[in-house]
Length: 456
Image (tube, rainbow, N blue to C red; front, side, top):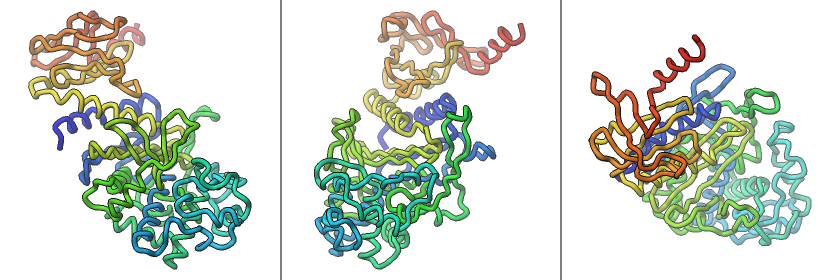
């Protein structure tokens, strides 16, 4: 393990726990792997706000469109075995399609470039207004002409990946859920993943939750809807650890995988740009990708009623991060970006030496809190309330064991001023003088505010 990773993940856990409370979210689970090793697994908050059930790493989540990456891997595995070709027309395997759709290739569909409808004429399955589509309803939708010609642009389609599930059934002569569970899920060594909600059984399951609007409070969304024919697009259930383990195996450099390096490169490379978005995303074969330089990533995200989830693989660092939330306004996307910002800064700066341990911790004032985060040669004053906690973070240069100076900071902060660790009679740090401000432990501030504002 790289020396900077352990302290970085320690701070990731601390920051994410704070973020969860700060944003009043129901729950969040995170897993981080390095190669095939699980380096971090944690859960914060509640699996079900109605009952108060605590969320644990063993709770399953509806991982929604992460399902597409499993379906894509199944398709590529069949291609490797010579049982189909990605340039085959989908109508070769599935009858009853509109002629323009029947002519679309499997490659166009799995890269979301076949021009197909996203969710059909009625997307009420994603708002609990109708059941998820069965095969007959799906095929009825796909008997109509597609909105756009194939290979014109990136156009996301849940219907397209559900159609690929039918292709897998036609080629294997087995139900999609049965074949994918054996040949992809089990073959990848996953023990906490099922292709649909029905297979999850009695294991602990996180409930979905609404946002705080329009009812001015969160309510539970059961999110136990069977996916039917849409399982191949959005029906999977898994834990954060299993999602991270699976996506780590899709990296072209992974030591073990159910796919060849060539298939993994095809799956993760950038086939189509999402040109109308400012996010700089691309789509591959069942994967989303983005980033620049040494922190390029691929992975997927998902949105099921009551859940928002996201996973990213960083091949150059050999790291995979999965963040699962059980709220329809869950912050999986910015939280994953925040995790990466922490990892990047620790990698750039390096870990602190053991004798600087007292320069880390969470300290409070009336205005909120600051985290002292010791790194090699300096201490950063992070703001855990920010989605990127090191944004504009002042830097403290060490002078003695208990003193330092703010060597770098915004002019609106306190550059050039001194910092002192104040110790109690037992030798432990009990407060921090940061420039002119006094930062204390949370319990001390609670007592101070109670005395000043509640007991006066």
